[in-house]
Image (cartoon, rainbow, N blue to C red; front, side):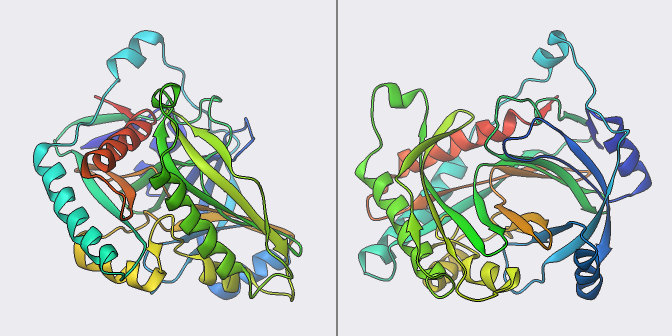
Length: 355
């Protein structure tokens, strides 16, 4: 059995099979805890009309309907404190095996072949890595809500019996405040330590450029004019990414559903052009992404914010699985992409110390 420790609220919800959410929103130092109740589409609309927030979860697969939940605050919830000895004993790493690296290389080479033939410009290939498959594992989320990471959305939730998702995503899919909307082109991954010696490469600038171009095309039918920020470098734990903000004023009263359908999945988690990338991912990956590379967020009548579900783990009673991926272009080199995936596993492992 896998046990999740670090908050008695979580342990109680899991024991009683109560859906729950614990999260820390970007630029906030407050951990919020909620119990969740499933809403139909009509019930969600009624909840919004009363001025309340709805929590929305969309799987990667667009053919699956988004899930809507009401949020009931759980004010008694808190993170348990661990001393330094506990923290050291819970430290863990994950190393990609030679077999996993070889399997990823085979996918990558087939993808580059398609790219070189002009079929597409970029595709994001992911791995679903089994972290553990043992009878007794203790996870501890004590690191999940530390204040060091302020520009990401950190969460742990359970929507169905016995399955928990935990993650830390630096990528906002959509923010809407009245008639203003914003999205983010986030790509290009380097370890912070490496940037002391080497800058981002042309491959990483190109990869991020594909996402900017795709998002411009996706937003154009909805806004009066797409406005772009300067390209920035942003940190996410041990990694640094390239980021461009895209925003605009809605030309009409478009719904969140219309905007999200246009944006999801972006080139940051799928590829460019989208439909060809989706088809190639379906052919090559061989695993169900489930909620990985989908989105989740909070919707209200006045403001909504949705986050791409990156850097995440799925936990059930028998295994802990990490979901990580890398953007493949014509300039991709197998070892570098596998090293990038290895670095991304480290960001997840910092969140869910286990023994």
